[in-house]
Length: 375
Image (tube, rainbow, N blue to C red; front, side, top):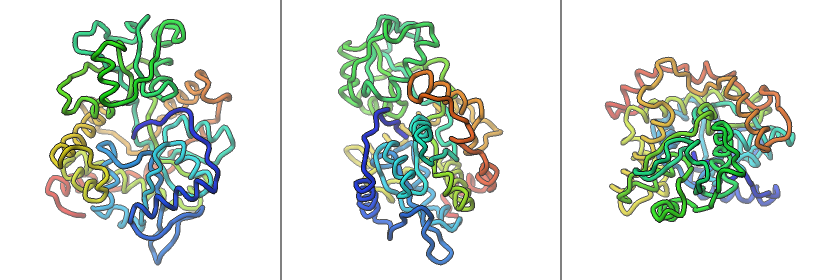
């Protein structure tokens, strides 16, 4: 999932309600599902799912797979996605009861909790830092310390990677205000052009944005991770604590379906991309189907590499939050002015559903994916 700007526009509840209603209608997935509780139709509960993007990408194959393979249906859930574009809008929609579950980065959740809003992370989705520093192949820059006195291109000066770069700079013994210069260069071709023309010495952004930037561009960048922020997980499934209490089975079922779809995607990403395109045609980005598929697979592969490196851990628990990582996020957010107080970790996350998230036959899901069978 792409991390939004740290500066989130304020929306009135009236405007937000209209935005969500319009987005639901645009999805074409059936009737509404607003309100503070899941709507029930017979034995099926409808969940309005707020997505912090304008369309799913290669880092979000789970949504299409869970729909097509019937994983949500098997849990008695009908999911109606609304593509709200940013985590800030998702968090506001959850806090106001217009969306039941959504995707968000931790910083926005921490800020909402500090303001007294009822938002909680319950499924650790992007479980590692996915911000990267990119340089030209012949650049002498190989670490954060090497950026002293250099100019760094960022999507926006307030964007998440710029803030994380400052934290990494301090970890490397630098003063980010004195030793680094940040320049907003946007994303895609403009950002790549700035690096190629040496207007900036390095770029810092998300792994999937680097993938989109270089796929088909004839350029290969050397990427490395900033030190000291490896465990700052990037995105979560979030809901209000009150909703989670009243809809525990729905939350557990949603997360289990998401976990199944994650297993399926790893075993057969090509099929996952096709399901995403078939379900959400606006997710295609490219001159033709072949180019769009190549781009989506590249995004999926780079995100897998960011999360797991070359080896997927055998003891992986889908959705689990390490307590130390949550505390690191709180400390990081306070140290860099994203929040003013040290929050109680129990107010911002829960692991109560993790056992249920992982209560399925992963080997069978993998076998189904490899054979192309439906569940």
